[in-house]
Length: 231
Image (cartoon, rainbow, N blue to C red):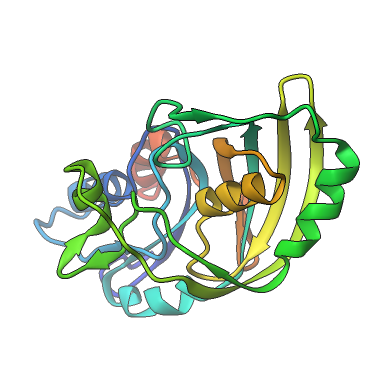
């Protein structure tokens, strides 16, 4: 493999790792393997630290293809806790409000989910990497400043209810969507549509384009994988 000329690698991002950490980990071990000090490495789509799953990493001249991969359809499996919200719409922050859930039935959920398929307008989370006057929205939000983000038009091809445990109450859904979709924001909007609240408790990106998570490398075993290329 010619990593300087350009290669495409697929990783299953571990829980707690930032996307930046994955890129740095890959760059370090490839530079060590090749005996060089610099190598261009980039990823084709951020995953939050609390999310896991498919990350596309490009090296060398293949970094020019990053935008191409960003436009590939993505599939996620998400678990939503109903009846409570957090400022970030996930577990990064503590619950800030609770809502009734007694009225929520499986039938209501099955009736609500299809309303989010097709072209929809979605307001990104304040705790996101969106730029606001030259700053990241999450930097403003963490300083306690007001963050006003414009809704963005995106496409959700499929939403499937995989599991429904109203005793928790918690649901797990599969989402197939376009570039720019925030599953955290989708959780928020689903909660509101159910006349309650919701936030993510787990998120896994299971596919990018035709690449499935089962086909991905484990970053924790990447050093051994790279060393094995010499054999």
